[in-house]
Amino acid sequence: MCGIVGYIGEKPVYDILINGLKKLEYRGYDSAGVMIYNNELLIKKSKGKVSNLENLFSNKKDKKGTIGIGHTRWATHGPPNQVNSHPHVSNSGEISLVHNGIIENYDSIKKILLKKGYTFSSDTDSEVLVNLIEDIKKSKKIKLGKAVYYALKQVVGAYAIVAFDSTNPKELVGARLGSPLAIGVGESEYYFGSDATPFLEFTKRCVYLNDNEMVIVNLKKGLTLREIKKDSIIDPYVQELKQDIEDVEKGGYEHFMLKEIFEQPQSITDTFRGRLISPDEKISISSLKRHYETFSSANRIIFISCGTSWHSSLLGEYFFEELLRIPVEVEYASEFRYRNPVINKGDIVIPISQSGETADTLAAIKMAKEKGAFLYGICNVVGSSIARETHTGVYTHAGSEIGVASTKAFSCQISLLLLMGLALGEKLGTIDKKRYQRILNELYELPKTIEKVLKSNSLIESISENYLEAANFLYLGRGYHFPIALEGALKLKEISYIHAEGYPAAEMKHGPIALIDENMPVVVIATKKGNYHKVVSNIMEIKARGGKIIAVVSEGDEEIEQLADHIIEIPNCDELIAPILANIPLQLLSYHIANKKGCDIDQPRNLAKSVTVE
Ligand code: AGP
Image: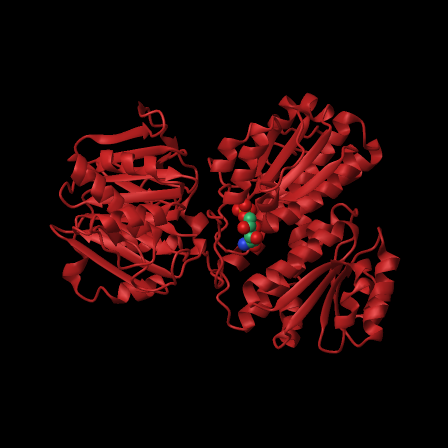
């Protein structure tokens, strides 16, 4: 969702802004724009890709300047077009602003400004904000920083902003509430980014703003951080980032999604690092160790999350109830936050998120915290808002995930959930020792086993050729494979725009079976163990009605081979490991179908990588 970049220093700003915006493309956007200051403001904006914006810079002179801000917009107020794109400029032409988030009370502020004679050319809430800042600055005769401060006291909603005032062109002002903003600290230069990727190649020193904080970076005075609510100056915490620029590049793969699918063995190795050192040693997750007592006395565990992370949560429920014997509930964060859920002391709430910035998940965390729950977060992005808002938690360490469709982050989430389930089950004495050891051995080998599954890539690519014209897909799984069926369907929808539904296999006869005919491909996850024979019966029901069957089966399965149109084998394994493996062919199937259809895989239409607005 909207991406922000900014720079103030001595380097030419054009490349920094354009390359920075490209690094943020993964967030999802529909238009882009930049402001460059070179003794006067130059604003260029365009609908569509950053490359369209670049085409507007045919004149070299326009690229000159060492201060600027840039933005990729994901439309909320008003359609994606040139006028609604950012940066927005105040009526006097002095202040320019980029904004990610939603100003909920923009309409009432707009009415007041209209009465004062302000005019507006766009439909956006952001144009209202930049004029509010201007109005305050002029009426109080104060500098930009103070004007931003007073303006933000009046607005309701979520924002990350960067503002520039051409009457004082030595500084940039940023602020955040609910949407992320990072500041890169160089030698006499400062960078802004919605995350650190736009400036990683220049500096690894980074200040992540917290909610209700604003920053003024001034070429003479340096960086000043202020808490808006308390109106106090605070010491910035400058982090040394460990991420490398290679993490956010494609490394020879056609798409980030494919790169990330193939990175999964390494990502899971990183998830397990220091936690699963060898199958003969105890699992060591430090935040769990500190809170074994809290888990052993928990009345209930509630997972909250959205999208793919919700599918992880569902599998988390299956793992935890099996291994811990503690009641577990799974909630969509967006629903949870707006109903009045019963939360008591003794409840553990586990938010799961790749980005750590999903607005609904964050809001649900805040609500659960107020009601007295203990918050144990699972997220991927280090230092993200969710990591900071929870009492404690664990990082998945999947590495940067750029493809909008989540792949490796999901695999790391579910592998970590299983590891946590084993650690807790062993501690609580709710898992049989032999079973514990068997699953732990298999988890230890998981990266290698995934390497084997990835060898099916070309087979899956050839299977995909048969389904490019399909309008619908059904995904079926039972037990531990049901969340995987949901995830498989979501992946296909997201990147190929083919309608797909995930169902528990046995539910098919309660309705979806009516859809089955020779035009309906059905992906069935049917590995040995668990409910295997029942799923075989479901496959027969599909076959009897002419449906096309793509089955993910255990190595050596001859029964389903006779029934299915295509089979994809995964190694034989414990039924708790099987969903982690079965998911991988489904990722590849979606990828190849979408790629052959010519879809924009890493930036699917209408989608944003981190959904920072409601
Ligand atoms: C995944 O492929 C999706 N793009 C999306 O459903 C995502 O999982 C969801 O928005 C939650 O994001 P989070 O994990 O960053 O909180």
